[in-house]
Length: 312
Length: 252
Image (cartoon, rainbow over all chains, first blue to last red; front, side, top):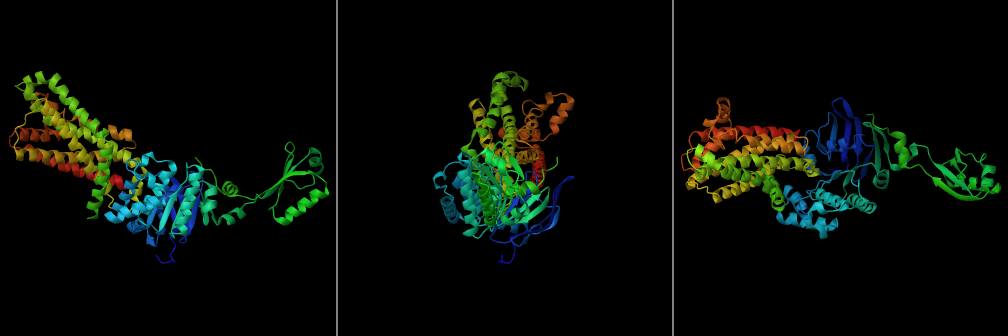
Protein backbone atom coordinates (compact mmCIF):
# COMPACT_ATOMS: atom_id res chain seq x y z
CA UNK A 1 0.00 0.00 0.00
CA UNK A 2 1.63 3.28 -1.05
CA UNK A 3 1.72 6.02 1.55
CA UNK A 4 -0.76 8.23 -0.29
CA UNK A 5 -3.55 5.65 -0.14
CA UNK A 6 -5.73 6.08 2.94
CA UNK A 7 -5.90 3.06 5.25
CA UNK A 8 -9.67 3.23 5.21
CA UNK A 9 -11.98 5.25 3.00
CA UNK A 10 -15.74 5.04 3.22
CA UNK A 11 -18.39 6.94 1.27
CA UNK A 12 -22.12 6.68 1.76
CA UNK A 13 -22.10 3.61 4.01
CA UNK A 14 -25.61 2.46 4.84
CA UNK A 15 -26.95 -0.52 6.76
CA UNK A 16 -30.43 -1.35 7.94
CA UNK A 17 -31.88 -4.28 9.83
CA UNK A 18 -35.43 -4.49 8.58
CA UNK A 19 -36.92 -1.03 8.97
CA UNK A 20 -34.32 -0.04 11.57
CA UNK A 21 -31.65 2.12 9.96
CA UNK A 22 -28.40 1.48 11.84
CA UNK A 23 -25.97 3.41 9.63
CA UNK A 24 -27.34 6.23 7.56
CA UNK A 25 -24.68 7.49 5.17
CA UNK A 26 -21.24 7.43 6.80
CA UNK A 27 -18.21 9.04 5.14
CA UNK A 28 -14.75 8.46 6.58
CA UNK A 29 -11.13 8.77 5.56
CA UNK A 30 -8.37 7.45 7.79
CA UNK A 31 -4.76 8.19 6.81
CA UNK A 32 -2.15 5.47 7.33
CA UNK A 33 -0.24 5.37 10.60
CA UNK A 34 -2.87 7.17 12.66
CA UNK A 35 -5.32 6.28 15.39
CA UNK A 36 -8.90 7.02 14.50
CA UNK A 37 -11.59 6.74 17.13
CA UNK A 38 -15.27 6.25 16.58
CA UNK A 39 -17.17 7.48 19.59
CA UNK A 40 -20.81 7.13 20.33
CA UNK A 41 -23.37 6.01 22.86
CA UNK A 42 -24.46 2.38 23.00
CA UNK A 43 -26.60 1.51 20.02
CA UNK A 44 -25.17 4.27 17.82
CA UNK A 45 -23.79 1.76 15.29
CA UNK A 46 -20.10 1.55 16.32
CA UNK A 47 -19.91 -2.22 16.37
CA UNK A 48 -21.91 -2.50 13.14
CA UNK A 49 -19.38 -0.20 11.47
CA UNK A 50 -16.49 -2.36 12.66
CA UNK A 51 -18.29 -5.54 11.58
CA UNK A 52 -18.79 -4.14 8.08
CA UNK A 53 -15.24 -2.79 7.72
CA UNK A 54 -13.80 -6.10 8.95
CA UNK A 55 -15.87 -8.13 6.40
CA UNK A 56 -18.04 -9.80 9.05
CA UNK A 57 -21.30 -8.45 7.66
CA UNK A 58 -22.23 -6.82 4.35
CA UNK A 59 -23.17 -3.18 3.88
CA UNK A 60 -26.43 -2.29 2.11
CA UNK A 61 -24.78 0.56 0.22
CA UNK A 62 -21.57 2.54 0.11
CA UNK A 63 -18.12 2.46 -1.35
CA UNK A 64 -15.56 1.04 1.03
CA UNK A 65 -11.83 0.60 0.53
CA UNK A 66 -9.69 -0.93 3.25
CA UNK A 67 -5.90 -1.07 2.82
CA UNK A 68 -6.45 0.00 -0.79
CA UNK A 69 -8.75 -2.94 -1.63
CA UNK A 70 -12.39 -2.76 -2.53
CA UNK A 71 -14.21 -4.45 0.33
CA UNK A 72 -17.07 -5.85 -1.73
CA UNK A 73 -14.90 -7.13 -4.61
CA UNK A 74 -11.86 -8.46 -2.74
CA UNK A 75 -12.84 -9.39 0.81
CA UNK A 76 -9.95 -11.86 1.14
CA UNK A 77 -7.37 -9.19 0.21
CA UNK A 78 -8.90 -7.01 2.92
CA UNK A 79 -8.89 -9.90 5.42
CA UNK A 80 -5.18 -10.46 4.76
CA UNK A 81 -4.44 -6.83 5.64
CA UNK A 82 -6.51 -6.39 8.79
CA UNK A 83 -6.66 -7.65 12.33
CA UNK A 84 -9.67 -7.49 14.62
CA UNK A 85 -9.67 -7.44 18.39
CA UNK A 86 -13.26 -7.48 19.45
CA UNK A 87 -15.29 -6.38 22.37
CA UNK A 88 -15.56 -9.98 23.53
CA UNK A 89 -12.14 -11.56 23.56
CA UNK A 90 -11.63 -13.66 20.46
CA UNK A 91 -9.39 -16.24 22.10
CA UNK A 92 -9.92 -19.97 22.44
CA UNK A 93 -10.34 -20.42 26.17
CA UNK A 94 -9.63 -24.15 26.06
CA UNK A 95 -6.22 -23.67 24.45
CA UNK A 96 -3.17 -22.23 26.16
CA UNK A 97 -1.86 -18.81 25.22
CA UNK A 98 0.93 -20.37 23.19
CA UNK A 99 -1.47 -22.77 21.42
CA UNK A 100 -3.73 -19.85 20.51
CA UNK A 101 -0.82 -18.07 18.86
CA UNK A 102 0.35 -21.24 17.11
CA UNK A 103 -3.21 -21.75 15.84
CA UNK A 104 -3.07 -18.32 14.21
CA UNK A 105 0.36 -19.08 12.77
CA UNK A 106 -0.93 -22.37 11.31
CA UNK A 107 -3.96 -20.69 9.76
CA UNK A 108 -1.64 -18.11 8.20
CA UNK A 109 0.57 -20.95 6.89
CA UNK A 110 3.71 -19.56 8.54
CA UNK A 111 5.31 -22.97 8.82
CA UNK A 112 6.36 -24.80 11.97
CA UNK A 113 9.57 -23.07 12.96
CA UNK A 114 8.51 -19.58 11.91
CA UNK A 115 5.19 -20.04 13.69
CA UNK A 116 6.90 -21.13 16.85
CA UNK A 117 9.35 -18.21 16.72
CA UNK A 118 6.56 -15.71 16.06
CA UNK A 119 4.52 -17.09 19.00
CA UNK A 120 7.50 -16.82 21.33
CA UNK A 121 8.28 -13.28 20.18
CA UNK A 122 4.68 -12.11 20.70
CA UNK A 123 4.37 -13.79 24.11
CA UNK A 124 7.49 -11.86 25.09
CA UNK A 125 6.28 -8.58 23.64
CA UNK A 126 2.85 -8.76 25.27
CA UNK A 127 4.28 -9.92 28.60
CA UNK A 128 2.61 -13.34 28.51
CA UNK A 129 5.66 -15.63 28.60
CA UNK A 130 4.96 -16.79 32.16
CA UNK A 131 1.37 -17.68 31.30
CA UNK A 132 2.16 -19.23 27.92
CA UNK A 133 1.28 -22.76 29.00
CA UNK A 134 -1.88 -21.95 30.95
CA UNK A 135 -5.31 -22.24 29.28
CA UNK A 136 -6.58 -18.82 28.20
CA UNK A 137 -9.79 -19.37 30.19
CA UNK A 138 -7.69 -18.95 33.34
CA UNK A 139 -6.31 -15.56 32.25
CA UNK A 140 -7.31 -12.26 33.86
CA UNK A 141 -9.25 -9.76 31.74
CA UNK A 142 -6.14 -7.76 30.92
CA UNK A 143 -4.17 -10.88 29.95
CA UNK A 144 -6.97 -12.07 27.68
CA UNK A 145 -7.03 -8.73 25.86
CA UNK A 146 -3.25 -8.84 25.46
CA UNK A 147 -3.42 -12.38 24.12
CA UNK A 148 -6.26 -11.32 21.82
CA UNK A 149 -4.13 -8.52 20.43
CA UNK A 150 -1.07 -10.76 20.17
CA UNK A 151 -3.15 -13.20 18.08
CA UNK A 152 -4.18 -10.32 15.85
CA UNK A 153 -0.49 -9.43 15.42
CA UNK A 154 0.63 -12.90 14.30
CA UNK A 155 -0.27 -12.03 10.73
CA UNK A 156 1.48 -8.62 10.78
CA UNK A 157 -1.64 -6.66 9.73
CA UNK A 158 -1.58 -3.09 8.36
CA UNK A 159 -4.80 -2.01 10.02
CA UNK A 160 -6.15 -3.10 13.39
CA UNK A 161 -9.73 -2.71 14.53
CA UNK A 162 -9.96 -2.36 18.28
CA UNK A 163 -13.59 -2.65 19.28
CA UNK A 164 -13.89 -1.35 22.84
CA UNK A 165 -10.53 -2.83 23.81
CA UNK A 166 -10.58 -1.75 27.45
CA UNK A 167 -14.23 -2.26 28.38
CA UNK A 168 -14.27 -4.01 31.75
CA UNK A 169 -10.56 -3.65 32.45
CA UNK A 170 -9.07 -2.22 35.63
CA UNK A 171 -7.25 1.14 35.37
CA UNK A 172 -3.78 -0.40 35.28
CA UNK A 173 -4.64 -2.88 32.52
CA UNK A 174 -6.33 -0.06 30.64
CA UNK A 175 -3.15 2.00 30.73
CA UNK A 176 -1.11 -0.99 29.56
CA UNK A 177 -3.48 -1.42 26.59
CA UNK A 178 -3.12 2.27 25.73
CA UNK A 179 0.65 2.02 25.72
CA UNK A 180 0.45 -1.10 23.53
CA UNK A 181 -1.83 0.72 21.09
CA UNK A 182 0.56 3.69 20.92
CA UNK A 183 3.51 1.37 20.30
CA UNK A 184 1.66 -0.37 17.48
CA UNK A 185 1.35 2.96 15.68
CA UNK A 186 4.74 4.43 16.57
CA UNK A 187 6.93 1.33 16.28
CA UNK A 188 5.06 -0.82 13.80
CA UNK A 189 3.51 1.96 11.72
CA UNK A 190 0.04 0.43 11.95
CA UNK A 191 -3.26 2.22 11.55
CA UNK A 192 -5.74 1.74 14.36
CA UNK A 193 -9.51 2.02 14.12
CA UNK A 194 -10.69 2.32 17.70
CA UNK A 195 -14.22 2.31 18.99
CA UNK A 196 -14.79 3.20 22.58
CA UNK A 197 -17.36 4.57 24.94
CA UNK A 198 -14.64 6.06 27.14
CA UNK A 199 -14.05 9.64 26.14
CA UNK A 200 -10.85 9.68 28.12
CA UNK A 201 -9.56 6.83 25.99
CA UNK A 202 -10.28 8.60 22.71
CA UNK A 203 -8.76 11.81 24.07
CA UNK A 204 -5.66 9.92 25.19
CA UNK A 205 -5.07 7.94 22.00
CA UNK A 206 -6.80 9.26 18.94
CA UNK A 207 -5.40 11.57 16.29
CA UNK A 208 -8.90 12.10 15.00
CA UNK A 209 -12.28 11.38 16.52
CA UNK A 210 -15.66 10.99 14.86
CA UNK A 211 -18.84 11.15 16.87
CA UNK A 212 -21.53 8.73 15.82
CA UNK A 213 -25.09 9.34 16.84
CA UNK A 214 -28.13 7.48 15.54
CA UNK A 215 -26.30 6.19 12.49
CA UNK A 216 -24.80 9.50 11.40
CA UNK A 217 -21.48 11.23 12.03
CA UNK A 218 -22.37 14.39 13.89
CA UNK A 219 -18.83 15.74 14.30
CA UNK A 220 -15.30 14.88 13.26
CA UNK A 221 -11.91 16.36 14.09
CA UNK A 222 -8.96 16.29 16.43
CA UNK A 223 -9.83 16.11 20.14
CA UNK A 224 -8.98 19.82 20.45
CA UNK A 225 -11.18 20.78 17.52
CA UNK A 226 -14.08 18.87 19.00
CA UNK A 227 -13.68 20.50 22.40
CA UNK A 228 -13.85 23.90 20.74
CA UNK A 229 -17.23 22.98 19.29
CA UNK A 230 -19.02 23.30 22.56
CA UNK A 231 -19.04 26.10 25.10
CA UNK A 232 -18.65 25.09 28.68
CA UNK A 233 -15.32 26.55 29.85
CA UNK A 234 -15.72 28.26 33.22
CA UNK A 235 -13.97 29.35 36.39
CA UNK A 236 -15.22 28.30 39.82
CA UNK A 237 -14.43 30.52 42.81
CA UNK A 238 -15.03 29.39 46.39
CA UNK A 239 -15.02 32.12 48.97
CA UNK A 240 -13.50 31.80 52.42
CA UNK A 241 -16.37 33.45 54.33
CA UNK A 242 -20.06 34.22 53.87
CA UNK A 243 -19.52 37.92 54.45
CA UNK A 244 -17.18 38.39 51.51
CA UNK A 245 -19.32 36.09 49.38
CA UNK A 246 -22.44 38.19 49.92
CA UNK A 247 -20.58 41.40 49.16
CA UNK A 248 -19.36 40.45 45.68
CA UNK A 249 -21.72 37.73 44.48
CA UNK A 250 -24.00 40.11 42.58
CA UNK A 251 -21.12 41.86 40.81
CA UNK A 252 -18.72 39.11 39.79
CA UNK A 253 -20.65 38.10 36.64
CA UNK A 254 -21.56 34.63 37.83
CA UNK A 255 -23.87 32.44 35.74
CA UNK A 256 -24.66 30.23 38.69
CA UNK A 257 -24.13 30.39 42.43
CA UNK A 258 -24.32 28.11 45.43
CA UNK A 259 -25.07 30.05 48.58
CA UNK A 260 -24.44 27.11 50.90
CA UNK A 261 -21.06 26.14 49.43
CA UNK A 262 -20.11 29.81 48.85
CA UNK A 263 -19.16 29.11 45.23
CA UNK A 264 -19.86 30.95 41.98
CA UNK A 265 -19.36 29.85 38.40
CA UNK A 266 -18.03 32.45 35.98
CA UNK A 267 -18.05 31.70 32.24
CA UNK A 268 -14.75 32.12 30.44
CA UNK A 269 -11.95 30.18 28.87
CA UNK A 270 -9.62 30.53 31.83
CA UNK A 271 -6.75 32.18 29.96
CA UNK A 272 -4.13 34.15 31.88
CA UNK A 273 -5.51 37.58 31.05
CA UNK A 274 -9.05 36.73 32.24
CA UNK A 275 -7.73 35.16 35.41
CA UNK A 276 -5.45 38.10 36.17
CA UNK A 277 -8.31 40.55 35.76
CA UNK A 278 -10.59 38.50 37.98
CA UNK A 279 -7.99 38.09 40.73
CA UNK A 280 -7.16 41.81 40.71
CA UNK A 281 -10.83 42.68 40.98
CA UNK A 282 -11.37 40.26 43.88
CA UNK A 283 -8.29 41.69 45.56
CA UNK A 284 -9.63 45.21 45.18
CA UNK A 285 -12.90 44.11 46.86
CA UNK A 286 -10.81 42.74 49.77
CA UNK A 287 -12.50 39.32 49.84
CA UNK A 288 -10.78 36.09 50.81
CA UNK A 289 -10.81 33.38 48.13
CA UNK A 290 -10.46 29.82 49.42
CA UNK A 291 -10.14 28.10 46.08
CA UNK A 292 -10.14 28.88 42.38
CA UNK A 293 -10.39 26.24 39.67
CA UNK A 294 -10.48 26.47 35.89
CA UNK A 295 -12.64 24.05 33.93
CA UNK A 296 -11.99 23.57 30.21
CA UNK A 297 -14.65 21.69 28.24
CA UNK A 298 -13.85 18.00 27.98
CA UNK A 299 -15.05 15.40 25.54
CA UNK A 300 -17.88 14.58 27.93
CA UNK A 301 -19.35 18.00 27.23
CA UNK A 302 -18.95 17.44 23.49
CA UNK A 303 -20.43 13.97 23.72
CA UNK A 304 -23.45 15.03 25.71
CA UNK A 305 -24.04 18.09 23.56
CA UNK A 306 -23.83 16.34 20.20
CA UNK A 307 -25.15 12.81 20.66
CA UNK A 308 -28.66 11.70 21.41
CA UNK A 309 -29.96 8.68 23.22
CA UNK A 310 -31.10 6.18 20.63
CA UNK A 311 -34.88 6.24 20.41
CA UNK A 312 -36.50 2.98 21.36
CA UNK B 1 -5.48 -27.19 -1.02
CA UNK B 2 -5.88 -24.31 1.38
CA UNK B 3 -9.18 -25.86 2.51
CA UNK B 4 -7.42 -29.15 3.34
CA UNK B 5 -4.58 -27.52 5.32
CA UNK B 6 -6.94 -25.20 7.20
CA UNK B 7 -9.36 -28.05 7.95
CA UNK B 8 -6.46 -30.07 9.37
CA UNK B 9 -5.51 -27.11 11.57
CA UNK B 10 -9.10 -26.78 12.79
CA UNK B 11 -9.26 -30.54 13.42
CA UNK B 12 -6.11 -30.29 15.57
CA UNK B 13 -7.82 -27.53 17.53
CA UNK B 14 -10.91 -29.71 18.12
CA UNK B 15 -8.82 -32.75 19.09
CA UNK B 16 -6.97 -30.65 21.66
CA UNK B 17 -10.35 -29.63 23.11
CA UNK B 18 -11.54 -33.26 23.24
CA UNK B 19 -8.28 -34.48 24.74
CA UNK B 20 -8.28 -31.78 27.39
CA UNK B 21 -11.99 -31.88 28.25
CA UNK B 22 -13.21 -35.43 27.55
CA UNK B 23 -16.31 -35.12 29.74
CA UNK B 24 -18.64 -34.37 26.80
CA UNK B 25 -17.46 -37.49 24.93
CA UNK B 26 -17.86 -39.62 28.03
CA UNK B 27 -21.37 -38.28 28.69
CA UNK B 28 -22.59 -39.07 25.21
CA UNK B 29 -20.81 -42.42 25.14
CA UNK B 30 -22.47 -43.26 28.45
CA UNK B 31 -26.09 -43.07 27.23
CA UNK B 32 -25.89 -45.93 24.69
CA UNK B 33 -23.98 -48.06 27.21
CA UNK B 34 -26.85 -47.60 29.69
CA UNK B 35 -29.34 -48.54 26.93
CA UNK B 36 -27.24 -51.59 26.13
CA UNK B 37 -27.15 -52.80 29.73
CA UNK B 38 -30.87 -52.07 30.27
CA UNK B 39 -31.93 -53.91 27.14
CA UNK B 40 -29.64 -56.87 27.70
CA UNK B 41 -30.29 -57.47 31.40
CA UNK B 42 -33.82 -56.07 31.92
CA UNK B 43 -35.53 -56.87 28.61
CA UNK B 44 -32.98 -59.31 27.20
CA UNK B 45 -34.63 -62.56 28.31
CA UNK B 46 -38.05 -61.66 26.88
CA UNK B 47 -36.62 -59.98 23.80
CA UNK B 48 -34.39 -62.98 23.11
CA UNK B 49 -37.41 -65.29 23.27
CA UNK B 50 -39.23 -62.89 20.94
CA UNK B 51 -36.62 -63.28 18.23
CA UNK B 52 -36.54 -67.02 18.72
CA UNK B 53 -33.43 -67.30 20.88
CA UNK B 54 -32.11 -66.29 24.29
CA UNK B 55 -30.45 -63.35 26.03
CA UNK B 56 -27.13 -64.05 24.26
CA UNK B 57 -28.83 -64.04 20.86
CA UNK B 58 -30.46 -60.70 21.72
CA UNK B 59 -27.03 -59.14 22.49
CA UNK B 60 -26.05 -59.99 18.92
CA UNK B 61 -29.30 -58.51 17.60
CA UNK B 62 -29.06 -55.36 19.76
CA UNK B 63 -25.44 -54.27 19.24
CA UNK B 64 -25.87 -52.76 15.73
CA UNK B 65 -28.84 -50.78 17.11
CA UNK B 66 -26.66 -49.54 19.98
CA UNK B 67 -23.97 -48.48 17.47
CA UNK B 68 -26.35 -46.16 15.57
CA UNK B 69 -27.90 -44.96 18.84
CA UNK B 70 -24.36 -43.88 19.75
CA UNK B 71 -24.15 -41.89 16.49
CA UNK B 72 -27.49 -40.21 17.24
CA UNK B 73 -26.44 -39.45 20.82
CA UNK B 74 -23.07 -38.07 19.76
CA UNK B 75 -24.91 -35.75 17.34
CA UNK B 76 -26.27 -33.98 20.38
CA UNK B 77 -22.74 -33.49 21.73
CA UNK B 78 -21.63 -32.18 18.34
CA UNK B 79 -24.49 -29.68 18.22
CA UNK B 80 -23.59 -28.45 21.71
CA UNK B 81 -19.90 -28.07 20.80
CA UNK B 82 -20.66 -26.20 17.58
CA UNK B 83 -23.25 -23.90 19.16
CA UNK B 84 -20.91 -23.13 22.07
CA UNK B 85 -18.07 -22.38 19.68
CA UNK B 86 -20.23 -20.09 17.51
CA UNK B 87 -21.08 -18.03 20.58
CA UNK B 88 -17.36 -17.38 21.20
CA UNK B 89 -15.50 -14.44 19.75
CA UNK B 90 -12.95 -16.78 18.20
CA UNK B 91 -15.30 -17.72 15.34
CA UNK B 92 -15.80 -14.04 14.53
CA UNK B 93 -12.01 -13.81 14.38
CA UNK B 94 -11.83 -16.78 11.99
CA UNK B 95 -14.40 -15.06 9.76
CA UNK B 96 -12.23 -11.94 9.49
CA UNK B 97 -9.16 -13.98 8.47
CA UNK B 98 -8.16 -14.93 4.94
CA UNK B 99 -8.62 -18.67 5.56
CA UNK B 100 -10.78 -21.30 3.88
CA UNK B 101 -14.13 -20.33 5.38
CA UNK B 102 -15.59 -23.82 5.51
CA UNK B 103 -12.61 -25.11 7.53
CA UNK B 104 -14.24 -24.02 10.81
CA UNK B 105 -17.09 -26.43 10.04
CA UNK B 106 -15.02 -29.24 8.55
CA UNK B 107 -12.77 -29.11 11.63
CA UNK B 108 -15.86 -29.64 13.76
CA UNK B 109 -17.17 -32.46 11.55
CA UNK B 110 -13.88 -34.35 11.53
CA UNK B 111 -13.42 -33.83 15.27
CA UNK B 112 -16.96 -35.06 15.90
CA UNK B 113 -16.28 -38.16 13.82
CA UNK B 114 -13.25 -38.99 15.96
CA UNK B 115 -15.37 -38.37 19.04
CA UNK B 116 -18.21 -40.58 17.77
CA UNK B 117 -15.86 -43.41 16.87
CA UNK B 118 -14.37 -43.37 20.35
CA UNK B 119 -17.90 -43.62 21.75
CA UNK B 120 -18.84 -46.47 19.36
CA UNK B 121 -15.66 -48.35 20.28
CA UNK B 122 -16.49 -47.99 23.97
CA UNK B 123 -20.08 -49.20 23.48
CA UNK B 124 -18.89 -52.14 21.37
CA UNK B 125 -16.33 -53.08 24.00
CA UNK B 126 -19.03 -53.17 26.68
CA UNK B 127 -21.19 -55.25 24.31
CA UNK B 128 -18.36 -57.76 23.98
CA UNK B 129 -18.02 -57.83 27.78
CA UNK B 130 -21.72 -58.74 28.14
CA UNK B 131 -21.54 -61.49 25.56
CA UNK B 132 -21.48 -59.97 22.06
CA UNK B 133 -19.69 -62.47 19.79
CA UNK B 134 -19.62 -61.14 16.22
CA UNK B 135 -18.66 -63.54 13.44
CA UNK B 136 -17.62 -60.94 10.88
CA UNK B 137 -14.54 -61.52 8.74
CA UNK B 138 -11.75 -58.96 8.41
CA UNK B 139 -13.41 -57.63 5.29
CA UNK B 140 -16.73 -57.63 7.10
CA UNK B 141 -15.28 -55.44 9.86
CA UNK B 142 -13.91 -53.10 7.23
CA UNK B 143 -17.44 -52.87 5.87
CA UNK B 144 -18.82 -52.17 9.36
CA UNK B 145 -16.34 -49.33 9.88
CA UNK B 146 -17.14 -47.96 6.41
CA UNK B 147 -20.91 -47.97 6.98
CA UNK B 148 -20.49 -46.40 10.43
CA UNK B 149 -18.16 -43.74 8.98
CA UNK B 150 -20.49 -42.70 6.18
CA UNK B 151 -23.55 -42.57 8.42
CA UNK B 152 -21.66 -40.68 11.13
CA UNK B 153 -20.45 -38.20 8.51
CA UNK B 154 -24.05 -37.62 7.38
CA UNK B 155 -25.58 -37.25 10.85
CA UNK B 156 -22.70 -35.00 11.93
CA UNK B 157 -23.25 -32.53 9.06
CA UNK B 158 -26.94 -32.52 9.92
CA UNK B 159 -26.20 -31.79 13.58
CA UNK B 160 -23.80 -28.98 12.61
CA UNK B 161 -26.62 -27.40 10.59
CA UNK B 162 -29.04 -27.87 13.50
CA UNK B 163 -26.52 -26.17 15.80
CA UNK B 164 -26.13 -23.23 13.42
CA UNK B 165 -29.87 -22.73 13.03
CA UNK B 166 -30.26 -22.61 16.83
CA UNK B 167 -30.21 -19.27 18.57
CA UNK B 168 -28.85 -20.74 21.80
CA UNK B 169 -26.83 -23.67 23.11
CA UNK B 170 -29.95 -25.03 24.86
CA UNK B 171 -31.89 -25.15 21.60
CA UNK B 172 -28.90 -26.73 19.90
CA UNK B 173 -28.78 -29.51 22.49
CA UNK B 174 -32.51 -30.22 22.04
CA UNK B 175 -32.86 -30.13 18.26
CA UNK B 176 -31.01 -33.43 17.53
CA UNK B 177 -33.02 -35.24 20.27
CA UNK B 178 -35.55 -36.83 17.85
CA UNK B 179 -32.60 -38.64 16.21
CA UNK B 180 -32.21 -40.63 19.41
CA UNK B 181 -35.74 -42.02 19.00
CA UNK B 182 -35.25 -43.17 15.40
CA UNK B 183 -33.33 -46.41 16.22
CA UNK B 184 -36.40 -47.38 18.32
CA UNK B 185 -38.77 -46.54 15.45
CA UNK B 186 -36.66 -48.79 13.24
CA UNK B 187 -35.05 -52.18 13.54
CA UNK B 188 -32.60 -51.09 16.26
CA UNK B 189 -34.19 -52.90 19.20
CA UNK B 190 -36.92 -55.16 17.81
CA UNK B 191 -37.68 -56.56 14.34
CA UNK B 192 -40.00 -54.30 12.34
CA UNK B 193 -42.30 -57.29 11.60
CA UNK B 194 -43.57 -57.09 15.18
CA UNK B 195 -44.87 -53.50 14.70
CA UNK B 196 -48.40 -52.36 13.71
CA UNK B 197 -48.80 -51.65 9.99
CA UNK B 198 -48.38 -47.85 9.90
CA UNK B 199 -45.41 -47.80 12.23
CA UNK B 200 -43.89 -50.77 10.43
CA UNK B 201 -44.07 -48.92 7.10
CA UNK B 202 -42.29 -45.93 8.67
CA UNK B 203 -39.73 -48.15 10.37
CA UNK B 204 -38.86 -49.90 7.13
CA UNK B 205 -38.52 -46.69 5.12
CA UNK B 206 -36.55 -44.44 7.46
CA UNK B 207 -32.77 -44.04 7.07
CA UNK B 208 -31.66 -45.74 10.31
CA UNK B 209 -33.15 -49.14 9.40
CA UNK B 210 -31.05 -49.95 6.28
CA UNK B 211 -27.92 -48.83 8.18
CA UNK B 212 -28.78 -51.07 11.14
CA UNK B 213 -29.68 -54.01 8.86
CA UNK B 214 -26.42 -53.67 6.91
CA UNK B 215 -24.37 -53.57 10.12
CA UNK B 216 -26.29 -56.55 11.49
CA UNK B 217 -25.64 -58.59 8.35
CA UNK B 218 -21.94 -57.74 8.25
CA UNK B 219 -21.42 -58.44 11.95
CA UNK B 220 -23.22 -61.78 11.54
CA UNK B 221 -20.80 -62.70 8.78
CA UNK B 222 -23.53 -62.51 6.12
CA UNK B 223 -23.25 -60.47 2.88
CA UNK B 224 -24.38 -56.85 3.25
CA UNK B 225 -27.32 -57.24 0.86
CA UNK B 226 -29.52 -54.57 -0.68
CA UNK B 227 -29.65 -52.57 2.55
CA UNK B 228 -26.16 -51.31 1.80
CA UNK B 229 -27.35 -49.36 -1.25
CA UNK B 230 -30.17 -47.59 0.58
CA UNK B 231 -27.83 -46.95 3.55
CA UNK B 232 -25.33 -45.34 1.16
CA UNK B 233 -27.98 -43.29 -0.64
CA UNK B 234 -29.55 -42.07 2.62
CA UNK B 235 -26.09 -41.16 3.99
CA UNK B 236 -25.17 -39.26 0.83
CA UNK B 237 -28.47 -37.34 0.78
CA UNK B 238 -28.35 -36.43 4.48
CA UNK B 239 -24.67 -35.46 4.27
CA UNK B 240 -25.17 -33.24 1.22
CA UNK B 241 -28.31 -31.59 2.59
CA UNK B 242 -26.65 -31.04 5.99
CA UNK B 243 -23.50 -29.65 4.39
CA UNK B 244 -25.33 -27.21 2.09
CA UNK B 245 -27.64 -26.09 4.87
CA UNK B 246 -24.78 -25.65 7.34
CA UNK B 247 -22.69 -23.74 4.80
CA UNK B 248 -25.53 -21.38 4.02
CA UNK B 249 -26.22 -20.72 7.69
CA UNK B 250 -22.54 -20.14 8.43
CA UNK B 251 -22.07 -17.69 5.56
CA UNK B 252 -25.14 -15.59 6.24
